[in-house]
Amino acid sequence: MTPWNSATLGSRAFVDPYAVQAPDAAVPAQAWSRDDGDFLLAPSNPAHRLSHTLDPQDQRRLVLQATLTAAGILPMPEDRAVIEQISSLPADVNEVLQRWLHHTL
Image 1 (cartoon, rainbow, N blue to C red):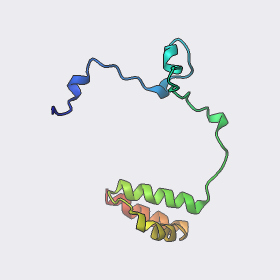
Image 2 (image 1 turned 30 degrees about the vertical axis):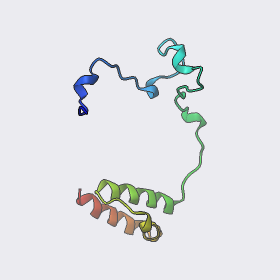
Image 3 (image 1 turned 180 degrees about the vertical axis):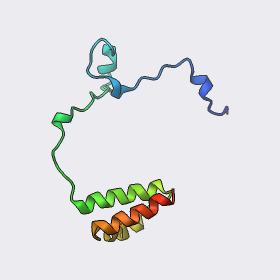
């Protein structure tokens, strides 16, 4: 088995499907509609997004999980209850905790 090498991919073009605004001449018609039912999704329109805000505790939980992951600490499934309890603490406690974690990076 040969190892993966990026030099072998030089002849292949990379197409970012999210860089396309709409199905027009920039994207061939067969890329948007195939016989097997597989097709590229159009980029989302920000005007059609849901206008739902998260509870501050949920926001703190998501930011805490992201900060832990960025610090190299992968939260385990059994850590969920502790993360929920930490997220329910006041916002200033979470800010200090995040500041400590950012200094470990």
